[in-house]
Length: 276
Length: 276
Image (cartoon, each protein chain N blue to C red):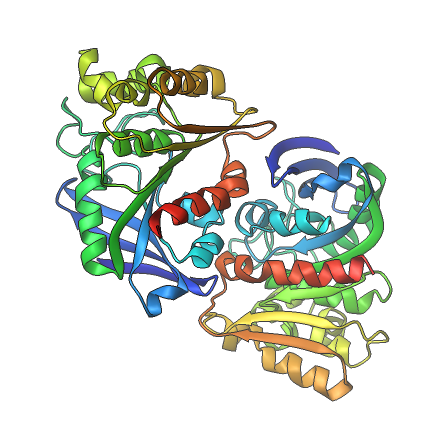
């Protein structure tokens, strides 16, 4: 990993690393916050998955998470949201192609070659982080919107791999909403059976592990009724008895102002699980 | 004032207003954070002046100040850094013209018509804020880099107008460094006597009010030796007995990561003065 940015923040370091991803077949940037405790010990890692149109920069510059990570002694790894580069397939729309990887392995052309964000997030990136940085193998995962979808689906598909999971404004039922239907049709094809493996509401039906879900959702979010639909998550959890804390926040929208307001609560939640 | 953005954050509202400035002869954007206490009372105001290239967006999206403003019950007003619009004079360089108003009233052409940021910040904007929002006339002022210069010079030139002043990485002696010399020659002309009225180190020689200065400066700041020169501020304060708290922070650079790390301390400082 080649360090391309380093900034002191809250007595630790906000770094950005660049590395060649074997999984994605391209060069990737990843934000890493190292709290001051890394001077003396290995620390657990919270993976943060960002939403549509984001790069590794949005979360690290706007969420204000470093203060809480420093308080709790947690590394935060914030990767980009898709493969990048001139030879990577793209689409003019903001919700397909670059910036819109949806944290799955694409099976359809022209996407299948590079769009393997699931394997990148679950396997290649943690192996790299744990080999290169003072990180333990204790992991938690969170994210926003498309990244909230990524965090929930990955945690449900990988029992035992994450100590805790949370999400802000997640796309909980991509098979039932426009963002997800468009992306899944392109990346996974028309057979909707294949979509179920990347749909939180579907995965909850067969979840083997009762990892509690912590979800915050703003009630002034422009995407609430058409794309996010937290009521489907609540019904799915109630249907199977899956533990869910769903905080509906009046007045809050889909922006990083919302994330900044409650990221401290989420990091405390993850810290409690990671330091257990 | 026409509200063009509103986001809930830390139980208050991060707004952006647009208004026609009589002083600047153009339309201006201004960020305003209203903490939750405005529901029941009028609150004092901290003015934040941003640095070169910034708009009203940089501080409100990156500094994480809203949390502390909510804790202390302080409104934060974050204006743009220069006049804007197609008929406003500009320069291709990042450090002259739009985004580089230097918080003075220009006397030279082609700048004199619109570049009157001193009068805008000191007179027009507070009058507008105090008439339109639940704000008292208790004011403090702070800023970063060019905006740190603005905060310090304005506070020193306007005794009694501000309860407290602070700065991050300020240009303390613009008459002696390249950024200031270029901008002052363009805006104020070649007579360096006129520059002294906008130079913190010069103003300290005749300051009639002993308003304490709180300054934070990162020691890994790329502009430290060539543009910022905090040693000149220390010498000027020592020379006249002006109270100065100068925090030199090892490892910190010129970015908003630095501001985010210490803005809580600055807001606590202003809150103590504003609520006295």
